[in-house]
Amino acid sequence: MADEKKKYYRDLEDLPGVGEVTAEKLRAAGYGEFSAIAAAEPHDLAETAGMGVESAKKAIAAAKTMVEIGFETADEVYEKRKNIAKITTGSKAFDELLGGGVETMAITEMYGKFSSGKTQVGFQLAVNVQKSVEEGGLDGGVLFVDSECTFRPERIVQVAEAQGLDPTEVLRKIHVARAENSDHQIILIEKAEEVIQKNNIRLIVVDSLTSQFRADYLGRGALGERQQKLNKHVHMLQKMAEKYNLAVYVTNQVMDNPGILFGDPTTPIGGHVLAHMSTYRLYVRKSKDDKRIARLVDSPNLPEGEAVFRVTPKGIGD
Image: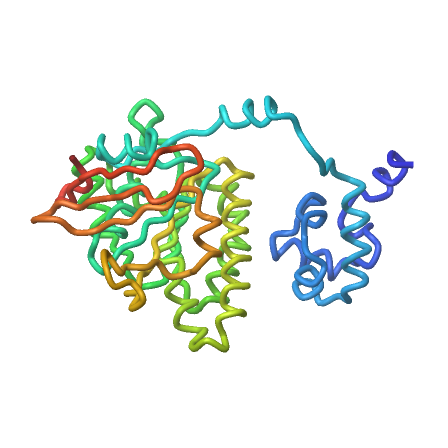
């Protein structure tokens, strides 16, 4: 029976409740494969494709017959994780804190106050990822989602020249999109697959992840909807990271928590949604002159710790 079904569901159009128009909508929204539909939420799929929830449930059930969804042994997971690569930050101390650099198949989040160096780290990674593997890069391109109007090609040129790279070539491999609002930001990531495949993208930078969500959903009444959308957005980034073995680096805004009377009241935006979804969570703060202190707040496999690095005209260094 399973084989017969597999022959029958050759394309998305063959799924129950999905015709040509619906299939095109699904592909445009990043549901181009049976595995993506099989793992989708019925309400999300219905909203995306303009179909009924019941039809979406049938399509998901049919897609599940086409893919292996289940457990795998820990040694299989271990083998997959051998494909993980790291991008150097430009600072040996910072790399050491991260266990060798910014990791692929993971989301690395850095939060801190204004001008603490979050964006500068993003620029440095956008240059470094283009280097060879031997030099601490991944020989790949960059997708840069700019939500705060902070992307500066002049700074990329400066960093590239300091690394001895051709700045024109470096700029060519960085694909920049300006997110106008939170919905636009979500769509940019949902529709990024084609750009990723065509341009060997190995790093996605979102600077910042939360600013548009913060602006669009004001007040406690909108908090629930904001967190739902943010959750979906971060899950999409994680899926991209795993599917294409790329690194995701996101910056995050902060606020002062008035409930904290002693110690540092700086709290990242995004609440539990972001706290749980970020694989590596870093808090960065200014020190004397051009020095910055990065603290690893959360990681599934690394100890908490701190690293001091510098933000110089040439980029990130020790």
